[in-house]
Image (cartoon, rainbow, N blue to C red; front, side, top):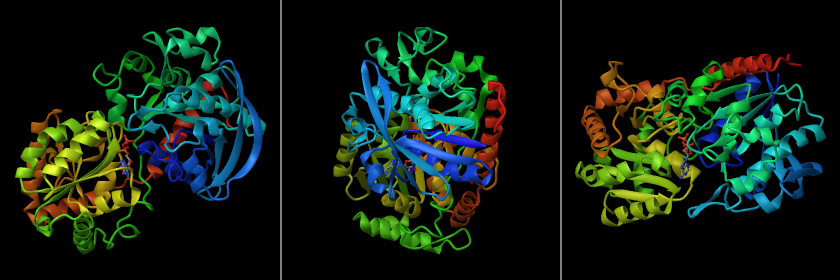
Length: 484
Ligand code: ADP
């Protein structure tokens, strides 16, 4: 089966979060279950710098964007053998320092950028005489593609749409509707219309032959008023073509026994290297060595309200009274960056806030910490807790979405358990879960049993790839086609 994956990120060329990791790893897993996979992402400045020998495959694809007749060039590169990555180039949109925007906010033309990208994809397929069985689009940035397929731009190609985060809806205000470029009937409630604007995310949900999201719990949650962001009714009405498939992790990239970023390797069988990783992390960050005696907490996250930043800020004083260390790596909204910098100033002896996006440091934090915090308001899947588990860092998570699916609390009578969960989204509940973890930490044998249990979990992509394959088959059937 021929699959084209379209997305706004794909690690290692372009990544701001979990979407990048997923799109980076899923192709190889699909290849292993027999698919022929290609990827298409925008040719961001950073992606072009990282890409190995990108070669131009076609130039001057004509893409209409509202009143403008624009053109795109297409380059191709490879990260994994046999998986071409197409890069859609138009420097006006993608030759910028960031993928989506800066700490001040999204780029002003973010809708035009991704409408342009989405519109270029069927044209790219035609120009390259490439005829996929399925296009898998991801999140609002490529949602429009599903409507374009529905419109008949690539006959015989089915559309599957994955929701990685319902919180980002790709809203297009009325004055910019002309950029979308669909016939008028698409701008009704049965189409893209969403409370007076157009939603590119909704285009994906409504017009895909099948919709997936990234964990079974999130698939249920988004059908409720609390988590549905206004789409719950729509999602309930199409639940026969909505599937929750838990993300995997790239087990080669995330393996403490082989991780080049770690100070010392370690494994489930031999945990001794982990202590050295903690020691090296404290040293690197200039934190006092006495923090070796208690648990070191870590958090690697986008700094947005979804991730529970307020909770951590509110809990901080009481948390530090527990005599623990905390390392936070993250970037995002200015207000949080400022608040965490302020907190660091008053707690130099136990807290480091590293502002920015730093992949090697992220690995060192998973390796060197004892506990990872993921206090999200909602979490479609969440990868950080899975990396934490793999690295023997016990996750403390809010019981929501994929966090709920991947972490087992000893309280749930799953001996010995792999982490600690709390339900209510408030600082007190987060603190109570950390206090529980802190108590168990003192029982070294039990703690190590939890670490080993977590490190032994199977988060490989194999299972997910098979489930995606089934969804592709269903989508093709729904379209009324057969795969080539
Ligand atoms: P989301 O996609 O909502 O950001 P996930 O938990 O699914 O959340 O994925 C987050 C990914 O981004 C993980 O790989 C995490 O390690 C990484 N990450 C987040 N912030 C940073 C950062 N500041 N530096 C390095 N990696 C980061």
